[in-house]
Image 1 (cartoon, one colour):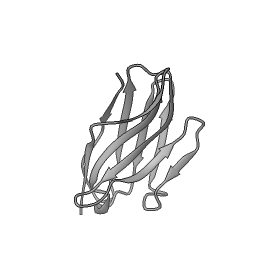
Image 2 (cartoon, rainbow, N blue to C red):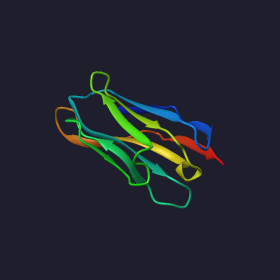
Image 3 (cartoon, rainbow, N blue to C red):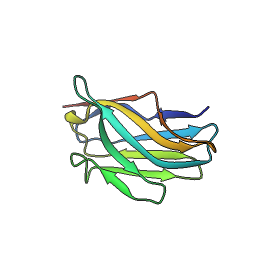
Image 4 (cartoon, one colour):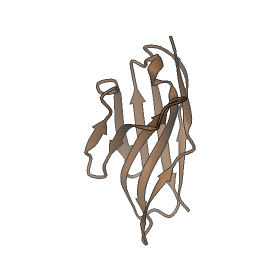
Length: 119
């Protein structure tokens, strides 16, 4: 059983910063891509940032230059450093990972963490 546990969400004023963390645990042989998606009320879930196991990173245009994704392979953990936050960044942020458990590769999701940016 694989689990993704997120932490670091909260309430922050516009212009502030937050750091999200997501740790994977369980039967893990290899983690391919890890990333963050978000879903605002009434909107579809959208990709925020992702990082492949070999280091390639991808960002949504709306967060480029403000958010930084990183991962610690030794800890099976991915981070999202968010700076210059805007009210439109308010959403539930979900961690995602593609994990190979020795038999198959599957997609896993965290429980979601709320990020609220006040104006």
